[in-house]
Length: 311
Image (cartoon, rainbow, N blue to C red; front, side, top):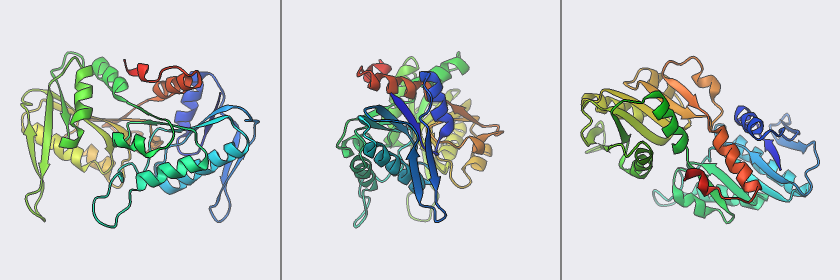
């Protein structure tokens, strides 16, 4: 087994390598003067089971192209099996046609990864479960909920938990976390805009009075929805509001928005290599998923069950 990493999230790759007690495969991944990407593998990978770790986060197109070229280089170097490990799968939010003459970019990216030569895909908290079906190769979708639930139990034991979905679409995710938290009660933020140009109205489905509310989502991008939901929960009588999100995209003024919000804390995993963005921030914290990914990589290499990770 060999573990190879692109440039998108080297700290996570090193943590996984340390957990597995194997070195990262030596490779030269650089750019020419015109920004073309060049990959040279500096070790023999013939007949090896190779795992390529690369989040296709910002800059999404550069990181995606880097991944495709690394996979192609491994295929041409006669690697036995190539598994694309995508802690964050970019373009996942474009998983359907929202209107006429629009693309389904998630399917296109899945095709690109397959055609490049990947034999398997391993990802974490895909934005929509049906994206697994976009790949014509075996795809494992890991969940960060076990790591989150352990963190919540360790840090907030004794509080009156209530798991909250920031929108109706995230109810399944929120219910799964609530089940892990000793069947904690569930609330939903119903967000609606009555007519164009008017501000959104936040309605809380469930009684959050005096509760320690835990907002759960897969992606935090601009953080507008989370911050508005936190304000609505506090207005409805919530004691305190924290948020747990798997993928911290944190674009634009998201960090400043979180710092100024009613959120007591926003916890994101290290699926995206943005450590410098949250360093020194009072309300942002990283939760590592390196052990989760490393254990999944080990089980795939050993041909054992990955789903049993969540039993």
